[in-house]
Image 1 (cartoon, helix red, strand yellow):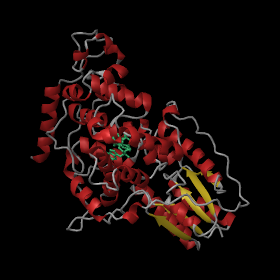
Image 2 (tube, helix red, strand yellow):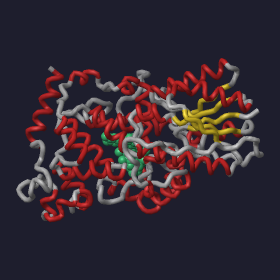
Image 3 (cartoon, helix red, strand yellow):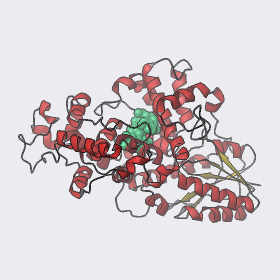
Image 4 (cartoon, helix red, strand yellow):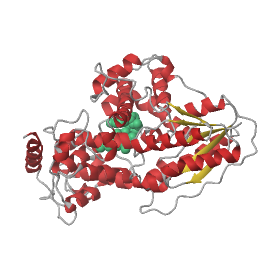
Length: 469
Ligand code: FAD
């Protein structure tokens, strides 16, 4: 009696809870359901969808080495999942389905429908905890509520962690061959945008493992000091791999412990700062379960729903195209569109610029990011946007508004990053590349600033103060 393992955003054979649990009990058939219409409706664009497809191809190879066939179905929408899985189960006489839980609301609803559909047809269904150390709901405040502030969440995470939660599971041993062939994988159809050249992001678990190893060997200990400088490759660039599960958070944390005398909370300051980012990732996964309104385009801080966001198509377009006249903002937006990834410091700077300087609704920026990000991940993206917009959990207080010019002189002091993405400024002296440069450049070559920092700041403060009154 075979067991089905339904892969979603957990595209690996090593340390995959659902796979190893299923394989321990009998022969396994792997399934992938491609839901292009639904994923696009969720906002994912060509870069992520292409990476997803390449990740499934790499997984198919890895599974083939274990004699596990991979069945591939195009179902377009989540609501077709129960029927598709039931049909596969009947065709292959499967007795059980295993998958690793996913936490955004639509994914939870999809999984609930699959559980009830398959169980009522007599199959057993196992939803495993895999993407997080604690199931959302396991870590609560003294009052029994979900944490809405990161620091106490992280403290509780460290306090309650025991070795078992991070234990790694080997990929299962090769199974005897089954009389089932893997399906050929269909190519990605033409989408509105074409995906970026994926060479910088080779898909699959071995590419992810190489990247983790190189990061920890060369950059991990410098992470705290270098992580904020976009011209330096100071971060791991593992986000696309974590978002699609080509690497597990346990593999990351175990590797840190290996370098850090078995510790996560103490020891090397660079490594512990990196651990903290992985806990941010988990924090936002808990938030989407504890506060499902954030999955329905709603603000976490409900009173901010009344904020008078501006309609400003010209401003929004200038932001999207990297033509705001603020060099760091523009360089960052061009990095996003040209490479499918943006440095974390710049995600904060650009998100704050859109929501504070332009006073444009964070939901528009959230969607634009997802359309381009190769690491687009609902919980982290929504959390990051709501943080920057001061509508979210643990949000930036509304009066703390980054000055894009100061951010630029602090975090890109030689303007190296700016010059890479805004080459129009190469003729301007380095020191002047940070600030609006209208007096030094022809506005046809590079636009003058579309807003004045001080006036825009005052406008944003007024809008937020009006909420309080
Ligand atoms: P590292 O600095 O090496 O961090 C290691 C890992 O920790 C990352 O790969 C990521 O999985 C996780 N992580 C780091 N910072 C955060 C954070 N603030 N919140 C949650 N997880 C974090 N991250 C995404 O994975 N997908 C998104 O769609 C996304 N959208 C964002 C939108 C905004 C407005 C902001 C401010 C942040 C967003 N982030 C998102 C978080 C963060 O910017 C990226 O995870 C990080 O830049 C990825 O680069 P890295 O892998 O080199 O990170």
